[in-house]
Amino acid sequence: MRTEPAGYEPGTVLYDPATRRVGEYQDRSGPYALLRPVGGGREWQADPAAVRPATDRERLSASVHAANGRTRAVPPDPGDLSRPPRPVPGCAACMRMAELREAARAVCDRSAETDANVLLRQHRRQEHRA
Image (cartoon, rainbow, N blue to C red; front, side, top):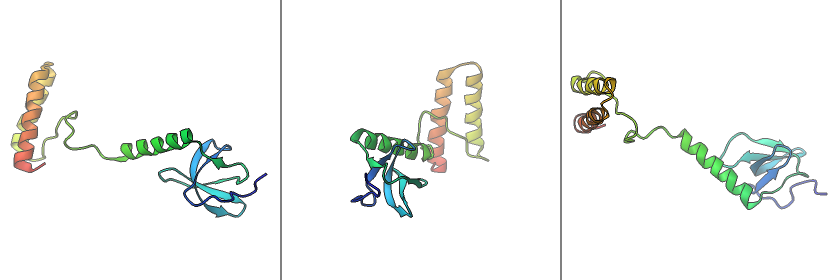
């Protein structure tokens, strides 16, 4: 029975059955192996006799989980057309177009609402460089 993660270099992806987590081997801390989640995060201590190299499936799952976490951490793209543009505070033209959009929204006129969004985006790009 293995008592230490012999041959594991820092960065080796291991599976810890006690926590049912996959992590990158960092170092030893006393009798424990230190593992960190793939993609970063808080380290945890694992029994070195219990850890084993992660399977391809476990490694892929941990990588996807880390990528999804990074994606959620990114602020929304200001050029994202799925979100309505915001008027620039203090700009009368922006406020006028936002009011047109709200009036169209109130009567469920999606075409006019979209037109107001397009005009507001164009105005923001031309006048506010946003």
